[in-house]
Image (tube, rainbow, N blue to C red; front, side, top):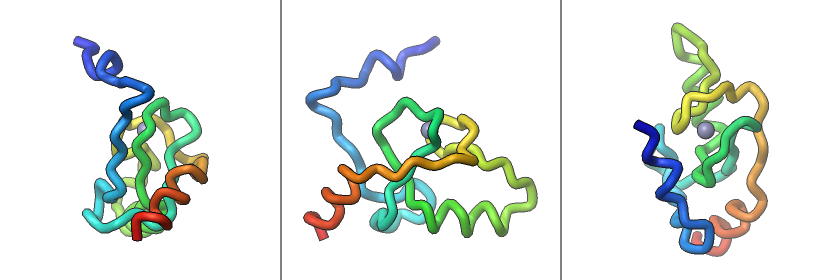
Length: 84
Ligand SMILES: [Zn+2]
């Protein structure tokens, strides 16, 4: 079943500014360059988690796509700066 893709409403997107790993506020919002979701994760947390992991997969924590390349989300970074 592929249901989650249909739930995205572009104008009403809600983005969590909380990192899915650390449950801390995201400081550097990134997502993999293959990701299609708006939700980001924190770059530093992701790197430190991956560098301590036994099996380094470099997969997006949200959609499991290859995330060796990152894209910084400037819009979300702006939002985070305003929110803090
Ligand atoms: Zn992803």
